[in-house]
Length: 179
Image 1 (cartoon, rainbow, N blue to C red):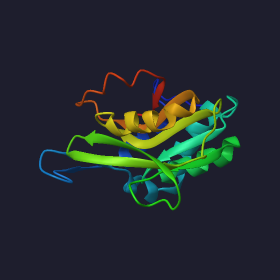
Image 2 (image 1 turned 90 degrees about the horizontal axis):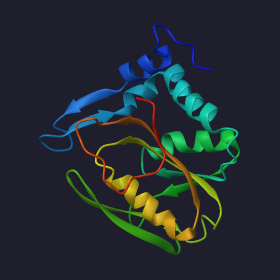
Image 3 (image 1 turned 180 degrees about the vertical axis):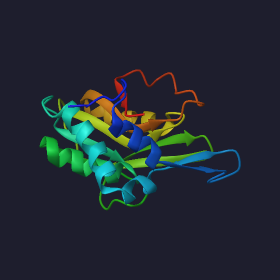
Image 4 (image 1 turned 30 degrees about the vertical axis):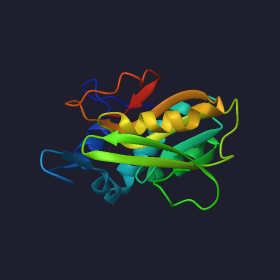
């Protein structure tokens, strides 16, 4: 359970404080939210995982899809704790075998996600996780990539949403952000 101090969970304060903002990375004008500094604090890292696990433990989730690369940091721990499989959503040419692909736009360029054919099946309940959401382009690509499988979307999880950027309108499913 969340223990609140002055109406704010102290774990959330520690999580927020542990995320470093790097100006002008990877290009001028971008304020990069770096979660690698959070990983240097085991208790804070554990708190992130526990908050997500507490929220989704009893929701019969069958799969957690993690977006490369930082979705791989939180996704497997959450999947194991709730008894779900982990599905890596990778950058192009990183997965062997047959894959589905979905291109998307970033605030500073374009990219693509891929998933193994057969990784998810119709009717499965899926969580999608990434470290943060800026424009929502990557998140939308993940949803489109998994969408043809007729999965039941439970939520998209992320540690932080960048408030100065607008999310794509097509991201109209449950989203849960710690910060």
